[in-house]
Image (cartoon, rainbow, N blue to C red; front, side, top):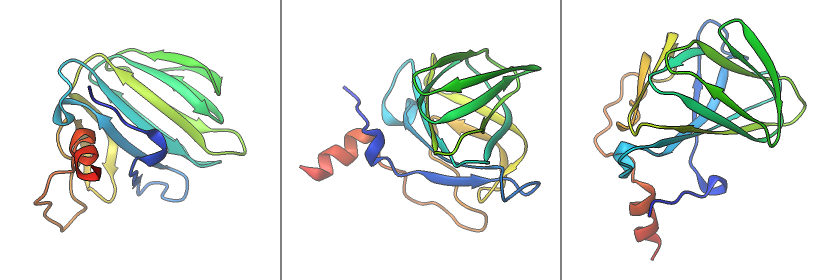
Length: 162
């Protein structure tokens, strides 16, 4: 069994040069192909008040579960307010994004029906310098760095703690 404690996840900070002050998110992909999942994936992300996860597409349908905070999600031209406890379905390959419209950190878990997800943004995600991210492969290294070691899967991290 793969497990992940959201309170213990190491989040990567990502931002976008077109609006580095507000187009930023802390994110991790704790369950996916590289962690050992065969048919599903999970993304966990946090957005600070006034910040946003910019528009992007994902290669598989995504179900968002808002754990905390007040957000506005948009899917194509449709906008919907989401609060803690709400769910939203985002169709595959449809442009979407999330904005924190409240006063506390928005925390979201996204569930995918495939273990490898390709997310495509309109511009490069910094500090990685790429606009296409493969959830299921190790995260890209920041510009100018080579990542030699793979991030440990939740199972490997749990084994190290024993």
